[in-house]
Image 1: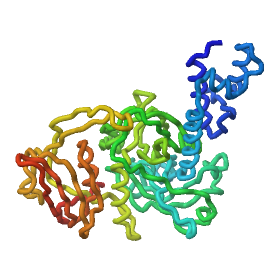
Image 2 (image 1 turned 45 degrees about the vertical axis):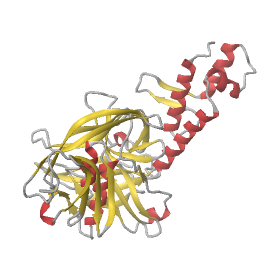
Image 3 (image 1 turned 120 degrees about the horizontal axis):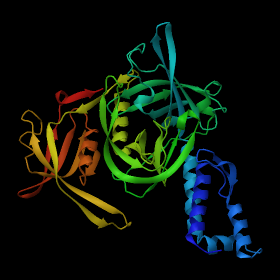
Image 4 (image 1 turned 90 degrees about the vertical axis):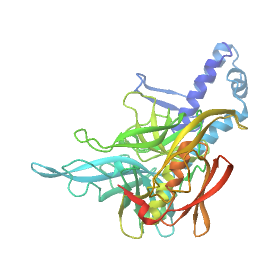
Length: 442
């Protein structure tokens, strides 16, 4: 038998599939039959036994097998087991979501169910309180026959392991949640659980945000969610495009309502029901809010970037004071930007290819707070948001999306400091935006 990469590739597939399936690293992984193979279990020991037979060495040890035939080092195995640990940790920060909305029919009304996913962004286990992030489209219907405003007032959550095999009919472990904030524009919604005994008794954890503004092609990522409404599962893939604008129809086929989002593209399989779940990196940090899959390409899934989602969530939470909110207050800054140069800096110290964009002011509305301060042709280098003399957000502008993302943080009467490069070098320009310069994005 050849000591080839073929066995290594087989092993990698088995190990990752086992990790995703939450089996032990050397445990069995069953085929679902979706790829045409039904019912056969395959594990690392099958490959090990095959290697002993084909090599003619019945005394071949497992360590020798891993080293000689698969070329796997202890570091390789540590990477795989670390990924498995991260996936399991993220499961504890995820929930299945079922929302119900009443719709009119010729005979009265019926209840329409929507299956989705959610991510725990805050938990107070002592008091049984919890805040969950999901997609707006999981808890909202644009259909004209909906009774009410289209938002669900009947939402249930399940922790991983509590679905009882069939949560569609068994509500024993369901946790009632209230919709406290939602935005169709940003496809985000917040659910609140208060005083739940199930939360108090749980081992649930809150997730961790990825603090980086940029993502990189080739990063290992995994999606956690209630795929196809069949309870919690995980899929593994890569970031295949670090950033792109996707357009999603938030309306109906008869009355489309197209909305654009900055998204990460991934090869991790995304299915109906994954919506509202997390896309995590290999460190277990949230890099995106899973929102869509491609109807044309089976290997393309999308997650709204954490850089924009986190800022929207913070704005929603700051606006919530016990009354449910709809929409988000967004700064209408009146400044237009354009990319005047784009290039690669090559590989950074971590061996990652980076893109740099030169972002320039192309227009400023005459009645904007920035009028007379920012000038056409100014190159934006850095932006700070200052509230009560404290810097609450700051980015170095290396890509155009950095500007749109940080502007989501701005509140009325905040000072925004732009570091610009103009004809005479770099300078700092501060602009205070008043309440009149904000609008509500539904």
